[in-house]
Every structure is written in C-alpha cells, then in structure tokens.
Amino acid sequence: MLAAAAIAVVAGSVHLISAEAQTTCRREEFEAVVEEAAASLRDLNSKNRPAFQEKLRELKDKRKWSHDEFLEKAKPFVRDEKTAVYDQTTDELLSAIASMGQEGAAATYPDCALLIELRARMKVLVDTQTAKWSYMFEKLNAELAK
Image (cartoon, rainbow, N blue to C red; front, top):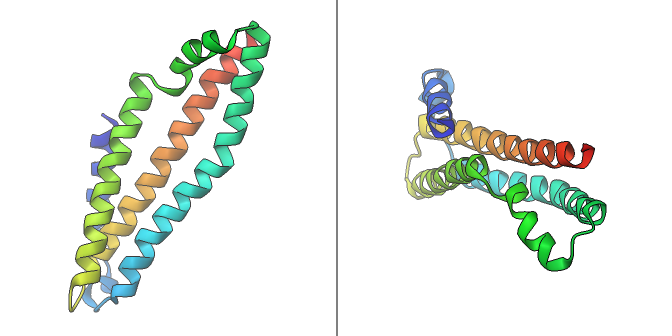
C-alpha cells in the first residue's frame, strides 16, 4: 500500500515536467541527487537512532527487563509488519534512485525528465524514512506512557 502511494507520487510528479525537462542536464546533477539522498538518510539516522535507543533503554529500565528479555521484547518496536513495508518501499526506492542516477551519469546527453523523476523519488524516500521513524517513536512513546 505504501509502495503504491510512493509510486503514485512519483508518477504524478513526472507529469509536472516543466520547461526544465526540455533542456540538457549535466551528469553531475544526477550524481548530486544520489549523493543528496544518501546524505539525507545518514542525517535522519544520526538524528533519530540515538534518541530512539535512549527511549528503548528507558523502557528496559522501567520494565526492569534483563538484557535477554530486552533483546526479545524490544523487537516489536524496531521491526513489525508496518516497518517491514517502510523498509521494502525504501529498498525499492534506493534501487530505483541508484539505477536512475547511474543511467543519468552515464548518458552523453542526460534526460532532464529522468532527473526530475529522480528528485521526486528521493523526496519520497526521505518522506518514507521520516514516517518510519515517526511511527517507531509513537509506538515506543505509547509504551513508555503505560
């Protein structure tokens, strides 16, 4: 469902191709978009991972779980059916972004429409990861509030 929504957003944005699509793009622009996606993901993870791990430790202390109990009982906060969908969507987007980036960087005259689509997919990727982190924090915060 999430993957279908992501594809719809990307498809919709491709129809918004402007005069920019009729000009020649540079290879460096494709490489920059791919690098920007990687940097955005690194930033999201470095911002959220420490805070999430701290909240997991708070829950462990609150529930007085042993280390082994913690490893088992913390799993649903990190991986469940919904996070699996986020992860699958992320994997699909990363694959498409890498492929499109390589295609654009390898072309003699890169297609600007492809660059616009690549940017749209990158935005969906960052939005997907942001939503995943929000979901995981909401679940954990709800459990801490009990």
